Image 1 (tube, rainbow, N blue to C red):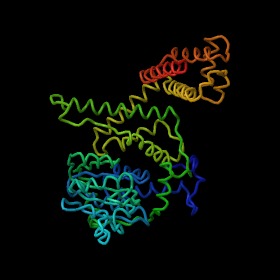
Image 2: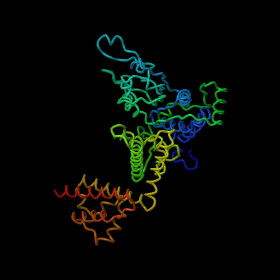
Image 3: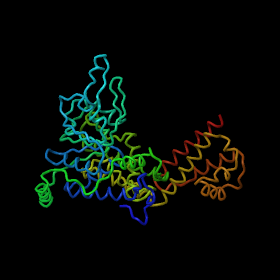
Image 4: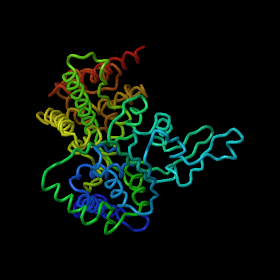
Length: 445
């Protein structure tokens, strides 16, 4: 929860005078209210909060009667001024169930167009119950709407108002189309039954008081503020600038790669006597990996900061693991711990910072070869690499001049003689050695 003394955005307000700090506090209080109303769902509620903050979709899987619908409705009740579309999926449904009925007059002329009023297209929130009961034709039609927020049907191309869709299912149906649908739901949860007597008592007590109805929260957040905040977090609105260092970004990618490798290693072990073609490997798409940065900014925001740190990456399990599946969550946290220990045992983060600054210099040289004709001291005057490289030059190479040969020799020697403190740094160093050789050979030719 943001601290009034340390919040870096305490003076930033919305157009109506409402502060970002107050927004974060209200979101936390509303999440706590929802957790008191829907028992033993704290992790899923936290995940849903970040789905709202990043404008992504959430999939809930559990057995019948676990309160998925109540949870979704209670989550939507946190906000006011948003239209909510609700539907129970079935095999017989056609796309017009979600997009609105066909415009008959246009249909008579051979054109397909939907009357979208009151449909999912014109709603900010959506709840699709038993989504995998829908047929593949309908699910395929939903793909663009869920991802690009557009209705694309025939000649009709309509921008959608969708912010977040929550879908529920009792089972997963595997096909090419359902895999694509699953990829649209960045946040996924499995709600396992909990037979703990105290938990069951609390659930029964809530039901006896409210009879499974949604409980209006004591206060609600206007949807316009949520939308504004989502746009800030996802970079569509420059009203709040979140930052992260290059080494933090590199660290995050290392953790994600380690987790993906660990999941696939576990899969191979589980299917030891099966051919690899008999089971699907675990794959994190570049799209999901890029969207992890939105979650990182949302985590930073809820912590009262505008600068992300490596420690924030531990919570990225909210999108890369299935919440409610302890093995997956623990595996992600293990990957986080392994990479963090590797980089903090020595000065791994500092070496990565230096190497990434070196990579930036190479990119600048590739764009402008004349940089090599200038004294390195001047070239590096505004870069993070300046102090490290110049100190190294003073120790290893006598004098600085502006010859291309000398500058190339300095850079080649610097990257070659850097001694990595761990495998992750060594991998980056070797990649940059190859990049240095490629670049200088290109310049010579």
